[in-house]
Amino acid sequence: MNRESRNLIATLLLVLLFAFSGFAQRDDIPIKFSEFGKIHYGDASARMDNVASALISEPKVKAYIVVYAGRDDYPGLGHRYAYRLKNYLVARQVDSTRIVAVDGGRRENQWTEIWFVPLGAPTPIPSPGLTSQPISDRAPIKFDEYPMAFAGDEDFDTWDGRYEDPVARLDSLATLLQQQPNLRAYIVARAQAVYVAKPLGKTLSHGRRLYVPVRSRKLSDPIGTDRKMADAERVYLLAHGVDASRIAAIGDGYNELSKSTSAVLSSKDALGGRSYVARTVELWLVPSGAPPPILRHQMLR
Image (tube, rainbow, N blue to C red):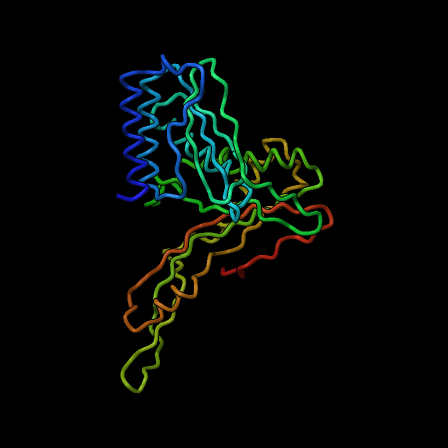
């Protein structure tokens, strides 16, 4: 039995324990209900379903979701992940006023803690193991990067769609911009592209044909989707007190294939194959006088 299975079983036992015994004997301290690192959506959703069940059975308890970004994670990840877990619980009929999402700072590796806090008990204090790096005054810093799923997408009901709302994606950025007026925000969005394998006209001497990956206009997002995505994020920041002169919204065309996927689509067995490259949004912070971020992809219109 691996570590994740043991942790999940422990969580289930806690649910049963709380359901039968309540918090009557532990009403003065917060209780760590669950904790986990990077896990797949299915495992995380099963854990959060257990959290929701326990909270519904204990109406006088609040949940504190503390997420620590890893050493190599973007600064905005802790806030975004904590709020998407909160949104998941709200979708499971837990009152939003009973859930507190907390950006815990940084640890060596990404980590999530779920604390149950009875009425009157002290709130859990985050314990980051690493000091967050200060923002340079000479170079842009990537604050966050995330995929963007639309209603109707196959994966909309996963973390990247239904549960990562503008509050999760942008509130921490808006707060930071209000606190540090020397910073500008650059929002760089790229649309979803679908690449298909097309045969080249030339056939090699041994009968093998060559294929080249080509972006399908019919299957990819409509032209202009990238700019609409960037503008939507910008509108949210404007509505939350950030001056328009401090926000640049950039549509950077379509996301490109990785070299490995491109090689697969170019193989002899690729005819009729296709590959999806999801929408993404990058959030950059640029100090006064620093150059803007360099866009990674060319415009593919």
